[in-house]
Length: 126
Image (cartoon, rainbow, N blue to C red; front, side):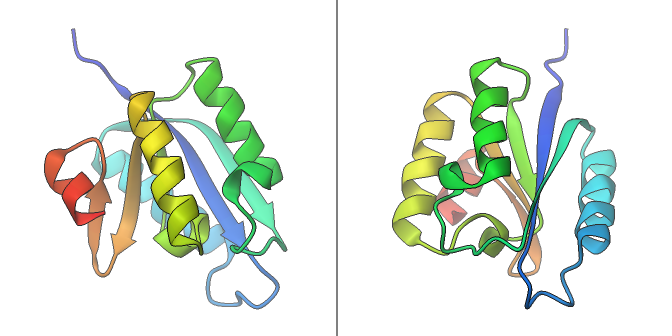
């Protein structure tokens, strides 16, 4: 029996993000999930929220915590690392917690390539 990947898509836009619109990010993430056979459970958006705020303190970040606790998802998918984190410490700490809970982080565009922390190469790259 195949263990399907079930994802929360995370989208963040700040007021200065004209080129990173909600619709552009959503389209990119849906295409990524379709290509990688990932089921979309929830699409979460933080609008007008600074990436400097720790993800667990953002409204959509709190929803991610709830989805993980309820075991509704086993991965988080976002376009780029800066949509999730601006602090290296927040990124490393959060991804470490997710990894211990068997939650993979997928980035559709990490310097021109995709990345998945549920793989050894993806975790090394991260």
